[in-house]
Each structure stands twice: as structure tokens, then as C-alpha cells.
Amino acid sequence: GENVEQHPSTLSVQEGDSAVIKCTYSDSASNYFPWYKQELGKRPQLIIDIRSNVGEKKDQRIAVTLNKTAKHFSLHITETQPEDSAVYFCAASLNTGTASKLTFGTGTRLQVTL
Amino acid sequence: KAGVTQTPRYLIKTRGQQVTLSCSPISGHRSVSWYQQTPGQGLQFLFEYFSETQRNKGNFPGRFSGRQFSNSRSEMNVSTLELGDSALYLCASSLMGGNQPQHFGDGTRLSIL
Image (cartoon, rainbow over all chains, first blue to last red; front, top):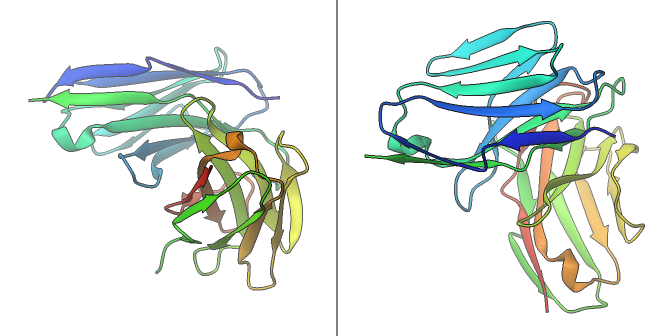
């Protein structure tokens, strides 16, 4: 089955700096890659997603890039703010037609310091 | 539009008991997926339901089961509870499943004593 690896497990940046989280996936059939942000004690919140027919997608300070050949995708957060502190999960969806099955990475704990 | 609603938020059970968790998807969403979240294993897929049918299943024992009703609400049942079943159980809904965005509920935190 699909396997998603995520790095780093923890990341500390100063406010205003950029943060990059990287994920690799194993199954070349995967074609949907969402990113979730989970604050302590709260639900995972979808922050951005990308499909395999697109190489990059941006939404204000957040961007995701996808390299299908290398089977990796990355989350980029620019001008980080304290409220960006959370655990971020990448995921990949194996293309099984209509069925949904997200395989998640192990998470990255991002700490934005003042 | 109301989000995904899960009840109850917290549950305490003892080994050997069974438990039923409930999930109401976002209005209009027909696909409901369940995930288990633990510190050690992270987020793991349990199963997905669409139009009252299980469409996909993860690698969990048969003690974990679910169902979906005609109004798309879903329940998950765990029988013969084990200490290792202590986890946050999350439900996510999407319009039709497939590779459409999934939106999570707040989860049910299950503790086994």
C-alpha cells in the first residue's frame, strides 16, 4: 500500500521566516495531496491541497509544490506568524477510482518563536 | 453550513466492552471516512462509507466496524475493547469521496481503562 514519509518531525523558526515541510510518497498512482494543520486539541484543518496535474499551488502565505517524478511534495509557509504554530500533516490519496483513503505522514510540529 | 459533528466528545470504557461513535457529515456530503489518531501510529485510515456501503477499508481487525444511514450519518463500532484502542477517532466527510477534499470533525476521544 501507500507509504508517506514526512520531514522534519519538529521545526522551529523565528517569526517572519519561512518554513518548509517535505513529504515523499511511494505509490506513483497517488494523485491527490492535501495538507492539514492541527492545533492542540483541535480537529485537523485542510489548509491547501494539490492534484497530480498541477506542479504548484499558492494561497496567500502558503504554497505547495509537487514533483511527480521524484514522488515528493512540499509545504512552504512564508512570513510565519505565531498562529502558524501547530502540527502539520501531509497526506496522499491512492487513486482507487471513487473510494477515499488518505495515507498520512507522521506530522511536523512547527513552532514559530517571537 | 454546519461542520462535521461527532458525538460523544469523550468516552471512558473498560476492556472487553463495546462502543459506538457517531458522525454527522456536512450537509450534502455523502462520503464519510473514519480515522484513528494515536501518538505512536499517527493518523490511520479505518474505513469509508458512501451511499450506505463500505467502499474502502484500512488494516484494522474485524472488531472495528461501521455503517452509514440513508441520511449519510455514520456510526463506528468497536467490540471487545482493548487498551490499545485508546485513541482519538476522527470522522471526515466529503461530497462524493474519491479525491475530493475531506473535512474533519473534532473527534471522539476514547479511553480504555
